[in-house]
Image (cartoon, rainbow over all chains, first blue to last red):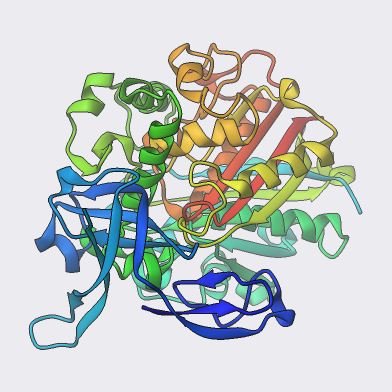
Length: 115
Length: 388
């Protein structure tokens, strides 16, 4: 997971930002490789999804706070019943959606529970 | 800066309107507003139209021009502007109209909102609404709009004593009010059981916790207060207009269960109007989901954080409660044609203040408030209106 970091205020960004919202023009943004571990802050189980995700329902969606600080939204790969606030998770590179049967496959980040 | 007043209002019925297209909806609402103000169209100086997504719902952009044309005003060459802030489009259109008149730039201005949502399949509709969130970092990864508010609900219920029944009571109350509102999409009352037995959408939110897909339009006309009595015997003064922004994603918010933009806009509105909570007789809040109403009444300051569930269950927000919330039926029962909602909220408050709210009438209504939210809270517009 390559995000960014502001060297002026030391704030980390994932998803990446090229402009620090706190320092603005005084910020110095550089790439940062995240460890990929975090904690679930809140979650839901989606039963009625948008078209591309209908086949995967019900699935767990959560806001994960990465250890470096930023929060991100992602699916949690596990039995939806197991998801809990405070659960420790780690990032995995997974297929998110496809553009139909012969279109582009979109990849991104999901999370799995860690013991 | 001049004082501004609402001199006329109009609203279509809200619902799945199979025989009304986008243009017909606007023309109907606009004509009702002009009739109400006893105003002839050529006296209009400018128009601001709230619309979230005609581009995806009916594949039409350039809405300002389209509406001016179909309103018969294009040949008068009036300035006509579309305003967009997702579900807060209407509230922002109203604010722009108020600013135009207050500044002295224009005299008679129409603020309208219109959304035609039923010409696409429900799947396309919900995907379009996901554009109110962050498409890249929320929608793309699998979030749905109800899913985002469901995450607010999960966080809220983890930290505060809100029960599933208290949350459902928001919908029950709004349906009770909607059944007394002739324009509301849903005319039937429901029970807590109706909510708890409905299909799960995104845990813990069920179908009856969610506002529907709706077609509809609303229009209001504003003018300088000093000229209002040329058009109406019941001018309604705009006591405050406030707007605030916040991060687009839910995950970047300071506190997941607090809409800081509501807090900011609400505080500013009270300060501009020089009023406090006890001066407000009723408030239309943005209940896109039941949890949104819970957060709204707290974030506007009508009760403390964590207490809105009990406040609602105790009947404090009912028609005969301490602070009636969503006398129109809210987004849940009245319906939510996205761009029109913010204007409909003004329409409802104006009706209340003119004593024209029929079975929903609040006694001695003098001052009302509207609260319109875009996305999960990235844009908020708050207005306060009062009898003159």
